[in-house]
Image (cartoon, rainbow, N blue to C red; front, top):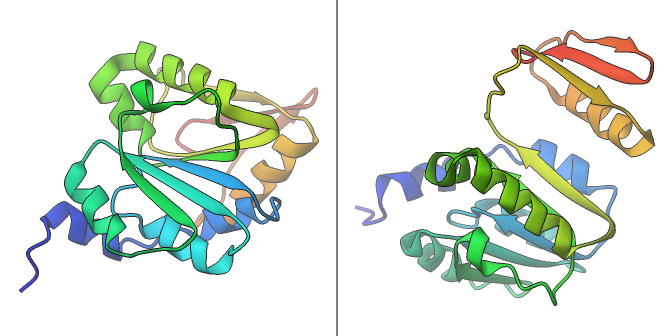
Length: 182
């Protein structure tokens, strides 16, 4: 019988990394930070495929980090930390990943905490770096209006192609407009 907490077991078997891998494919190598890395499942999968990258995973749950450290990944480091106090502005990342963790920041610190987190992430991101957010935060507005540049359009198209259902949206003056349910 496994002595891991139920949440840790769920994280280990929850494979939803295909979209993350696809988005990161535009970045050949680099320093990647995962905020709320849990047991390190995504970093584990990515580290084997991306041997020229270095991964840092942070999570406030020390039990999860202990499980992640037991994986002994060569190109990875796992740290018990809260994103609001962790960020070392001397270190710069090529990509920062929030995979189902931003809503936890919102629950613990409110919208202001999310804004502080994203502001700090912008400070540690290298020029041209990626911020990847995959989460279930539902905005109060029913309509989402996203201005598209070349890179944003690329990621939007990847998102639409990987969706398990049809995504309905309109294009108006270089903006993609969609209902938040999509």
